[in-house]
Length: 388
Image 1 (cartoon, rainbow, N blue to C red):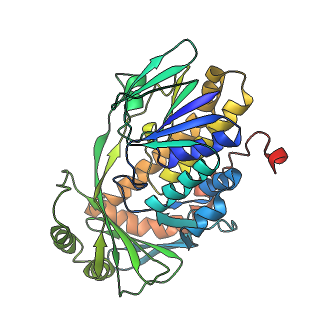
Image 2 (image 1 turned 120 degrees about the horizontal axis):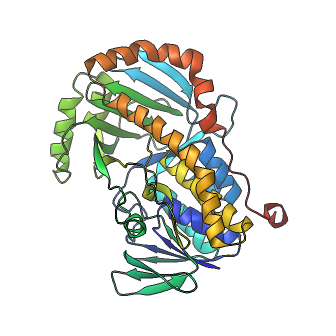
Image 3 (image 1 turned 90 degrees about the vertical axis):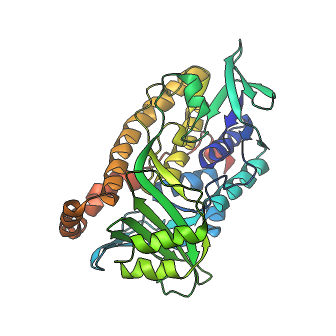
């Protein structure tokens, strides 16, 4: 068997590593040479995603590229502490959440994929996928073609593969939320804590980096899409106005020394055609989730797909088994992500109810409510014991 992976982000390169661990020939085709692509800010990997990294043999390297973040604190806009919980894990789990720049994660995973024997090609964008007698032929915008037994579409929320699978597939829609992220200097922040402030105009996230700087992200609620190409000073002035009533976000914003490219948050209606006998969707191409689980869910996808291909008798049977194994969990994650998004776009009444009820909910229900998410284990790759 040989596999073409379209998309060299988290889902794509993780699947390449997993497949190479099984001895499958893999070629990854990615449009952008830079590991971060057009998204240069940070992300987190929860305990469920880290179990996948451990199964792939890359956990230590990924953790070494990021920040250990054991705790998360949620704050109201007025500065009231709403909750203090383990970040991305249950209390007894020693797999602390790790936060790192997306580019650092992708760069680390790409290096591991290449070391494992995968072929990574950048500057190539898929335009067509044609069935052949033995599999599929990928056609790229450059005119390049490649053939394989299977094509894995890990090409993100604006996936070409999804449209090729089903011309009537849903398209992304703006979710009423956009993010502007950056780095600040000279402001205090406790190490090992991920802070989330529920402000009047959306959530504000920040955490301390090991070099004494602070990474931050403003997730702004806005019914209309902003102009993403405005200048950095214009963005900072805009954010300063939006968060003027929240002391800590205002202080962090005022100390900004670096701004990352703003991004829009999208929703995607349920994808009903996720595979055929030769093509399958992975990661955001199938299910953009956010809520601190985008990377972890992509990693889960990669491992479950590889396990299915390694245990089933045909590609078609493997893709059906993969779809069956992921459907319920991804549907539940989509509902959780929608609730997370709604909490950041709440109006005055919603904010009042959230600030009133969240401390009680966290105190009495948090561990039970999140156990399904953080304790999930995809298992090992076939033959893991023999490989050591």
